[in-house]
Image 1 (spheres, rainbow, N blue to C red):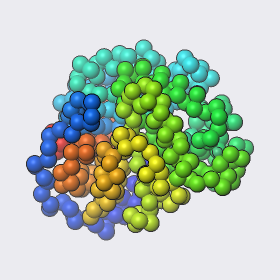
Image 2: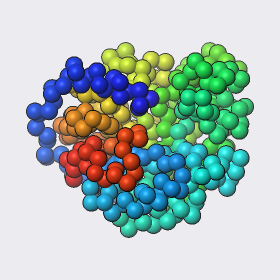
Image 3: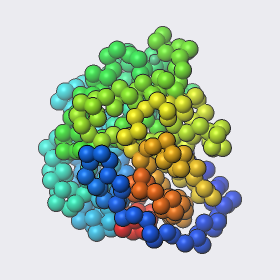
Image 4: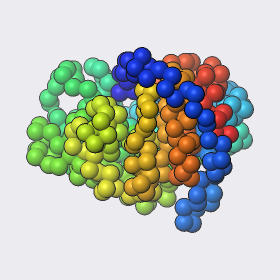
Amino acid sequence: MKIIAATCAGISLLLLGGCLSARPVATNRPPVTEPEPGRARQPVWRGLHLLINGDADIVILQEQLPRLAAAGVNTLILEVGYNFVFSSHPELNAATGVTAARAHRLAAAARQAGIRLIPELDCLGHQSWSKKTMALLAKHPEFDETPGFFPDNAGIYCRSWCPQHPGVNAVVFDLIDELAQAFEADAFHVGMDEVFLIASDHCPRCRGGDPARLFARAVNDLHGHIVGQRHLEMLMWGDRLLDAAALNGGEWEYAKNGTAGAVDLIPKDIVICDWHYEKQAAYPSVPLLLGKGFRVWPSGWQPLENAQAFSAYCRRQQNAHVVGFLSTVWGKTTMDRIADWPPVAEVLAAWK
Ligand SMILES: [Zn+2]
């Protein structure tokens, strides 16, 4: 998880500290991305990823919109997940979740501030955190990839849903539709990061299956609905598409569980949020994903110099399919101070 990566980032800082800081930042990068066929030119995506727990967060965020816009932010990824009051599946509702009315008010204010809202629901993986099982599998344990196994989530990182359960997509698509409509979004982020439980021996449908094909099936099902049916753009995290052995990386930001082959089995109009939080001399996943035909949204975190190193590397690619930069927060500052947080304010300023 992103949080655990903080430990690795600290180690990396000791090993690689200063190796990139003196390099110049390219200044001749095209100011806009190349338009996709039939799609208008879009500005550089200067993004911020935020965890949203309920209406209280939305209220504070709405107050911050003018300051965020002044800092250069023009896109917000709102990881709402199940922290929403769903009308389609009230059994999943969070008591203090985001209401559709509040989401619409935020959408109006964001439009006025020139900020695009993209809601996120973690799909497939991240269906639990520590001992807490998230709403979908808590209320629909039949969708679980490992039903009845790992009580209290002991011995696993996070639960997954089964990509081959015949009932799961209908529910998930309803949730996606509600979130997209409430935030008046033209794009949706499906998460898909750090999926470790896939093709489990505990799943009667997936046992013995190819993790890459099963992962791609989940992506393609989501794409069929989000892009095919709803005509939204689709975004996802990139770690499961990256082969740890080929790229010489760890199991968090790269895959060691056989999913990486999915990179050749999914549509290329998905925007890949390629996250790296350690400071590295190079980030080979960026040219790899660009070479596959994807648009790439590099995603950094903290400390500032790590985010700046990744940002500078991506700018040096001088590739119009690098759509911008996404700053993640993961709880390291509070919502009311977000516009001033250096990994946001200073890194995104380079992309203006
Ligand atoms: Zn399964």
